[in-house]
Length: 134
Length: 109
Image: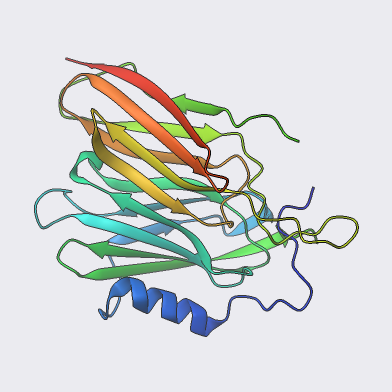
């Protein structure tokens, strides 16, 4: 059963939408590289269920704390995928899930730290059979 | 109609104090994205699990706001630092307001 079919005439997530979502999440801070690692397959044969993992270097104590990680996909009908929230009781800032990708595109992970700093990583995933019914 | 969502959770039964344990969770759910149409061309309304939370002894450990891009039967794997014995409470919230929960105890020495 196709899980993620497009509505006719519905545009894919535009780059401006992705940029705005990142800016809103980052609260004005410029995302830096480093600290955050997004792991995703280079090639996904089935876009209905693509495993992704994110891990952020952090002691998860005091100021060295990851509060949230935003996951986006820039080629889906809507760019939003999920937002993870961590606490000191998480022990480490790491999470894995499975997502839908309508076509080949970038998956983006953005981490917001307790001190307000923001880190970003992205991976392109080539999709053989889109999670969109075609 | 599909069967009622059923959580499946894998958590260690025992741990050492201060250990970081890995929790694996899955719930059966179609995660209807709101992007599909039926054979007559009508949009099938969105119905997804939109929130997942994990608490340990009443304290928040991990949570996730979920959008339709998360796959059917949503799977989450994450960590928790355990300093004492207790109970993990896992909660999934459906678009229709239904709440599904599961509890797992861990013995910490």
